[in-house]
Image (cartoon, rainbow, N blue to C red; front, top):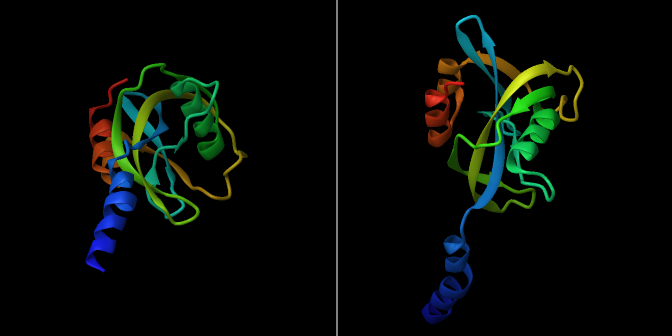
Length: 153
């Protein structure tokens, strides 16, 4: 029995953990208010405060996919996305079938010019403008906290 379990571990489970993490893209949506930078956070399906994020899409550069996520999840109707990621952080994504996938999320700044009241995920998510210091406290992923804490548009 132990030989069988070692075989399952060696051939089935270990390769899954050796795979590189899946890549996601996120939009750090921000606006400037007087002398303050505000960040737009949204709720995840579990109620945590996060950035709009999702999977890369064929035919779209990373910043373009991040801007698309900002529209779908946060209602960013118009924004200027920086083509260069300002950093990345590690997280886990629970898929619909219950499988948990390790992810590396690349973060692209998006200066928000206009927000829509109605957008694809308006009924699934809350959104809130907060000053960066509050965003750092609200975020749960350590790497995301670090990116928010060092962000200076």
